[in-house]
Amino acid sequence: MEIKKGTFKKGIHPSYNKHYTSSLPIEIMPSPKEVAIPMSMHTGAPATPVVEVGQYVHLGELIGQAAGYISANIHASVSGTVKAIEPRLMGNGSKVSCVVIENDFQDAPCENVEKHDPETVSPEEIVKIIQNAGIVGEGGATFPTSVKLSPGPDAKIDYVIINGAECEPYLTSDHAYMREHADKVAGGLHLAMKVFGLEKGYIGIEDNKPDAIEAFKALNDDSIIVYELETKYPQGSEKHLISAIAGREVPSGGLPAQAGCIVINAGTAGAIYDAVTEGKPLYERVVTVTGSGIKQPRVLSFRIGTNVNEIIEYCGGLTDDIAKVILGGPMMGPAIYDPNVPAGKGTSGILCLNRADAHIEDPSNCIRCAKCTEVCPMGLMPMYLGAFSQKRNFEKCDEYNALDCIECGCCAFTCPARRPLVAEIRVAKRGVQALRKKRG
Image (cartoon, rainbow, N blue to C red; front, side):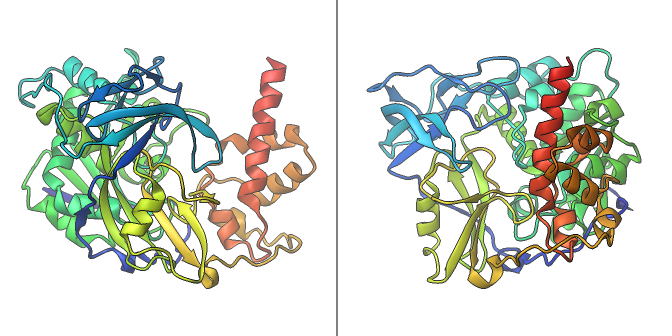
């Protein structure tokens, strides 16, 4: 297996704080008494419930049908009786229709499970299996994977890249998954390569995960090239991973496929392999429960729809000086005001911070030091975007390419004035989108 090195320009080096869980194995959390499975935990249209209250459902049974091309199927993560179909609060503060299932703890499987041989399955079958299994990106974006693997007849894909960078501070679930299931990740990569008729596949892993790199080396697979990437944030951004590995640039406003590349999260690759070889839909995933505000940090495999509060309690509960709970990592994850929400397909982390770690200094006036520009991986000028956003000058925000912002947080992290630049640029992006819509 060939090992190469790579990185991208700019970026930052925050305190990674992965020591809480970086050496921990994946632990299987017992399934809960009840799951509330959201019909919208993916990019695109919410799924339509196809079960009724009082109905018995099997483990892995379809309970939500994709409601459009960009949508995803939803499956039961336990066997039991449908208790309710009702709106439930989500981590982002919205309410989403959920299928609530009372667990009978039998894990009674579906009878119509189809297993396929990865050597003989066709490219068309692979995409269809992924679609039926409801697989979405597990890195956080939750884009339907079958759509990603169907870029259109005019697209020429040269690279399929597994994203094993996991550059967000604190998070280690991808690291643990690659270390323990390198064979499944590689198997998922080979299936994606088969879709595009490629002989070589690529895996990008930051160099702070040497044991994961060694796990892939041990496979002795000459068709896979592993890139040992510099540990730098946001190395795991699709656009910057493509730059580091393929040396290509995704066009402004474009998709990776327009640069001839497909990027798949490591956990997603494992889910692809399980769907094809075991007929297993995406009804469980791995999450990092970590930080100074949790009593027993853990890396857990949990059933989709498990309440975040129950996951926290399984990890010993919160510390007395808890100040903030974040779904995801500290750079891009949203803080939640109530952990009584279901964990979904995109829940990569539950980060619990005490008062000292959660403290944010009050912002002061911008001093035009341009440090935000120096670190911006997209080559933007965040100080100006923030200022234009404050003045609601969305024409200027458009002129300064606000929509190219990936909201990685490098600018806010490095700003000595502690300006809330990401929040300001989010407002700018919404304003630019409204402006363009008005223009027609």
